[in-house]
Image 1 (cartoon, one colour):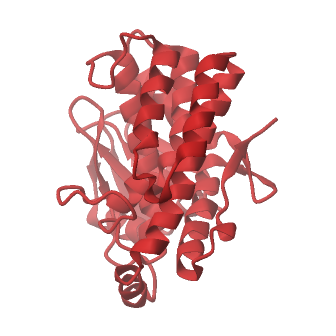
Image 2 (image 1 turned 180 degrees about the horizontal axis):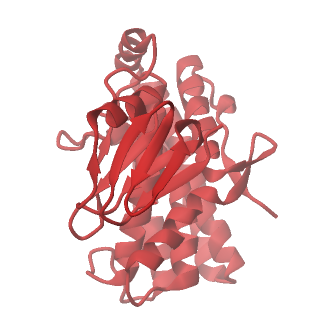
Length: 291
């Protein structure tokens, strides 16, 4: 099972030979492709061979490219994620609005539940109780936007009443960076299972190529929130970014077993597809924090 997160931060050349990625600089480092879960190209001074990119795509290794500010800007997604992609896409197009509402309601409820538990851990009992009320008020498809109301209460409880997600501050930079990593890992599983990232359950923005990923990632946002809250960065540079990346290596419990977050995302995404195909929310598998 792949597990290694590789971050390339310096001017190097990357190429492929005999199942290995070669990292060439003053010295040469070899990494077997079977070990790589995620390759992040953080520097724009990196050069890669087409043969390496082709092999990474074949093996469904997630590759994220960063811009000149070292923030994620794009990712590598193969055309063919599964042998039965065409059948999966036809099935996805035919997902009923009722089934999508049913699954989305469960996802939103789980997201708010995670937020509530985090606030309980922080002994913010008043705000936690309010989120419990929102959970009980959720209608099919979250028609009354309890998610949005919960988010306002939640973020103000974490970062203060003056906090806004629109502010240009290190906390938001860290949150955005972490969310983009989670979204990318979810997109990897969507395409690996043969589905389209564009066709969502709830998100339906014509300019968003990752509507389905934006839906499915919601319960995992809390993992980034916890890390950012613990660190409360007053700057967001390389060291802070690597702390966020390491969230993918943390352990959670899912389906009764201990797994890395990266593997929990895989299990969860597959359970979503099973649940919507069978129209059975009992098939959903959400993670729980250890302890």
